[in-house]
Length: 202
Image 1 (cartoon, one colour):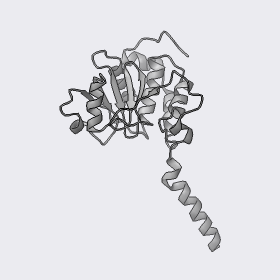
Image 2 (image 1 turned 90 degrees about the vertical axis):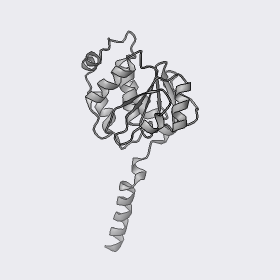
Image 3 (image 1 turned 180 degrees about the vertical axis):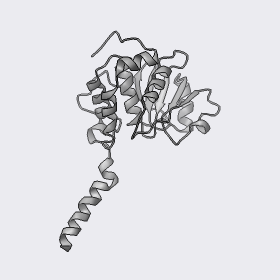
Image 4 (image 1 turned 45 degrees about the vertical axis):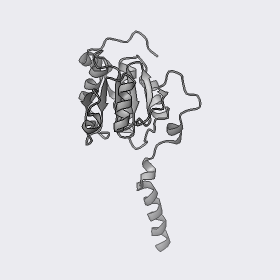
């Protein structure tokens, strides 16, 4: 009986520990057959996990103050912070960057969050945009996936594949995020965000 409970304790430890929520190995490294249309990795100081999604959209993990200044030098106009309990205000001081704070909860993203984000990236006066969360993987990943579908005309399947396998560090614990994207009614999202139907589609 003692041996049984010892084994059970080990199993529960590994199932409940942070290891179980770690990112997929393929997600951290990127797929060996990575399509050229996926976001391109960039190496800039203070901007971890930085990738160029399109001419008007970049993604990253939490920037440092140096990273905010670097973003300005890159031509970024607006920083969109998706973290619920963390402000960028102190890091943005003196940069001249616009700041948008969309407090996204990874366990329960809202349609309103998506609509607001799309309005920002579809506003020429605010682009190029840098969007980030803490790791630049999950909340950032789902917003970029929505952009891929709503603005660029990708299929949901391909946008989710990039989110999971693109090398951004997607964490398997957030299985709800791909499900959230799958359930979105894109015609309604586009209409509310003031976006027309994309001319190109996957």
